[in-house]
Length: 475
Image (cartoon, rainbow, N blue to C red):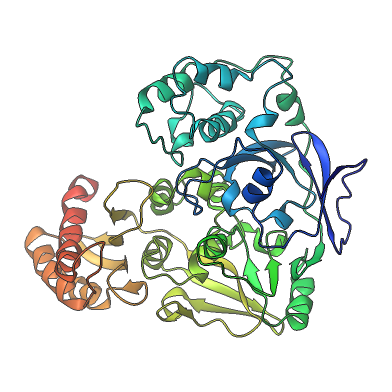
């Protein structure tokens, strides 16, 4: 059921109704099962510009614009509609490709795509939406093509699409969306929504723990980039979903003399903007993690909480010597990240606990690199991921951390190789010997991404590559 209504109702505890703004109009949704995605709901209501191409956030055909806070104003972020559960929009504002035009007048991005950028048309709406997000980015000069990294063109006609993007000029003074961005975005309020199953959105840790006691089997939901894929492709359903995206305790970013604390609920795009390159190893990782569409929703805590052995975040954080801050009803505890992963897709989280933050000790290692071996250089799952953080003293290894993914049932540290190199001269002969240690330290499996032999070979090669690429840093 879809009705236009007079007020947004932000902050209300709604039992069976969701209200949000869609293309500038307030809508009310009733009786929709909580695992329903925005994409599915849109297409069922005749807004078919958003397409389903993959149902896992890989192609961008379903892209929509979500209004997000940005200082005193707002920003428009392109996100995957196929991964956005409908109840998560309660109190929020979203635009589809249909909402960009002003009556019969096309949006400048749509006009640009008509000049040859649109081919079969299937991917076009998604490209338009991602282009619009970049078009409205504050401080934009030119066009950052990385904004389109999550959009695939089946016709392989990327050159005219690129040309359309690069042709976009400055915002016109009377642009209505630009005026909206001058005002703050709505804050997500508490939600308790039931339609067969239950969706809950607390606004404090205390509320979260109360809800967990009420619904002990509830699944935690942050950005939804993993859970929504399970819902779409495996038809996985939880009796209750606990959305932790509105918890301010998970949005910290604090620099201390001893460490920097990164809130587990911050999206990767938020972290990238806030850190401004101050942690170079993370800066190297961000553009290699999926696409901008995914990074606008995926969180640091979610990436760790899945405990995937092929996730790229854990190797980087292991090399940085990170700790996780775990919060539960009885308080907080801190755990080294290497002790957090206890087995394949298993963690040290106790019942009722969640990851509140990640702490990275300071000072940072002076020499650090992240490498990702995959079939595609961007937007792909790793075959092997490796992060190195090195400190030298008079040409010898003073400290070295090596974080790895894809070579064991869990993300792992290469302790034997680190110990072998400690105190030794950082020179090619020593590094080649260490590469042999590294190759023998793990027993990876063979799968469709790469054989065990290939993975072992990559381990040694990446260590040697790290050495060769950093000669000018310390010579």
